[in-house]
Length: 250
Ligand SMILES: Nc1ncnc2c1ncn2[C@@H]1O[C@H](COP(=O)(O)OP(=O)(O)OP(=O)(O)O)[C@@H](O)[C@H]1O
Image 1 (cartoon, rainbow, N blue to C red):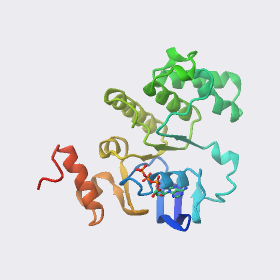
Image 2: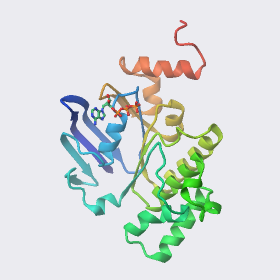
Image 3: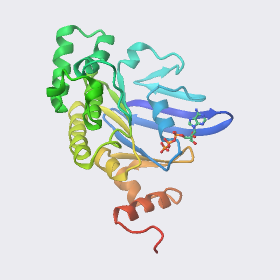
Image 4: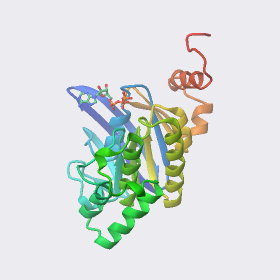
């Protein structure tokens, strides 16, 4: 069943066309990676999908409801969560940081405490519960952000380069944990990355975006095995990097 759909979306800034998406549908439980070169429009697309930025024109449908992007109901906001490249820390303890969204959502104290504890434990930072958020390392702070997002029990989770600041072992363990939680909870996840290896680990589906347009979308394997003419040079560069070859050497 379709959870989120974009139709005939455009996004312009200062008379510049930044994004044009004819159609993009996400089924409940889909995990889709969005990849493309710098400035292609990945973050713009994610922000529109997350309903954080209204498009210039077009239609967004969430769980069968047509959305007015300039007037998102709070009840709808409570069904989604976002995690960004740079962790967001509020001037309070780790526990309070994770509990904040639950408080806003009106979750009772007992359940709030139980959920915060559960997710701090899942992301292995329960021992930092009383630490001030500003004292966390980058990896710990990103775990806190993920705990905050999952504690909200979102139906859709939007992630913009969530692992880019992390060292390789932290990234690998976090990706593994995140993927298993997404599966277990049947959460729809949209994941922007520059890194095809991350996309392959996190997503079954892939959308390649170049110059503000989705050039190709489908199952990750299908897209990588048969890239379109426009997507091929970008994906080929990635394959070369993976194989450790100098792209300048034929
Ligand atoms: N508010 C704005 N005003 C003008 N141009 C903008 C604005 N926001 C984004 N852009 C432009 O839109 C294009 C797409 O930006 P976006 O951040 O979505 O790309 P991206 O694919 O996420 O890039 P990167 O990989 O470098 O993070 C860029 O050319 C950017 O300069």
